[in-house]
Length: 513
Ligand SMILES: [Zn+2]
Ligand SMILES: [Zn+2]
Image (cartoon, rainbow, N blue to C red; front, side):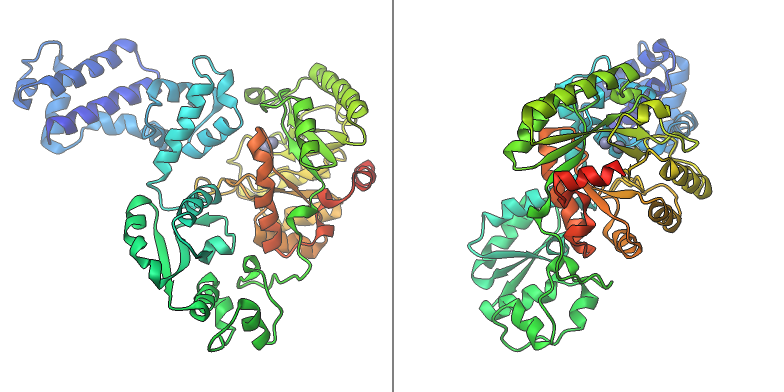
């Protein structure tokens, strides 16, 4: 045990005490002890109680740590704090005081939840937090994640774009090419002539990057096909000696060309899969009325500039107080503003909606006389995640059965690399969606991608239709729709399965039912 090790444990004790809301003097005594130890000539001096300002009890603790490597008091405090909250202490620049505020006000218990809260601008309503701090926290999370094993498509894309610049010819392959949701490595095929660059690149990125070197053009195609996978998919094919391109490989095996995202073990092949240009309008958008950063008019102008025909605005409902959820009065104001904008920007159409919290008992957040004002209602869970599987399933089904519910939002609540979805019987939920003629969302936030592609296949076979939605809070988020389309393509969904590929008139008709 060095001075540094002991100081570290004392520092953590001070942090734990802060998070637990213990008395300030006690906390100060520990912070003071940390400084004294860092400056002390030797540890004996402190253990013997000869250091000014360090009391008997802390001296005893220092002694215990020195002799055993830890201390009972430290372990006891630690056990009182949720594990995810402890993990937050690893984020540079955040600090125990802020963690306490986040935990108490927003119920943030993990890095993933914190990341979400930042993306949904929830920190801005807290005292002592501002835009700058929120940005810095996001940066700290990004740095922290570099040391974790799994990463999402956003980070994968960033790495891919950097590496691409360094090669004359490169094709990304493996999970990235199949557009999986999470990654533990990036794979690429390159030509042998460029393999001198590999070592340097491996050093530059903290992620695992695997290069497959090809001797010539035919070999390149062969390697690309083999490494794209999935393993079980590739096994079914005999690869010809010198393939000119992938189409030839498929043809020689009496198969049509299959896009990489559908090369999975499960039968998901669909020829007329949805294309990126099929999306005609965007639903699930948050505005400045709740926790979004764009005003209604800014959203409309932006979507028009991107060629979209309609928007579905769905701010948070009143239970989501942390997200500035809408009270009845503000709903009225928003509806009036939407009416004005619909006139001003016709034929662009804004559908009036709400993302209503599904309360613990499965009811929605407003009375019927409010719910009936909307063109659509997205019902989502944002709290009470820890119900039993049975209770959670019943809760969601009750929400689906509510006549005002239109879409089930982020149905499983998973946060990729961070949190599993809540316990639900997804088959039963899908059946309820089908029976009640309700839609399901493919939430395109890269940390959600919820529903996942495998469950989308099940939903499709039941005849359920989907909305692909970015759950947009910021202007960049609209771009996330493409990740939702990737999910749909993997599941072999066609244009007609996705409601927001329909024209504005058709959507109007569907919603009015
Ligand atoms: Zn939501
Ligand atoms: Zn949302």
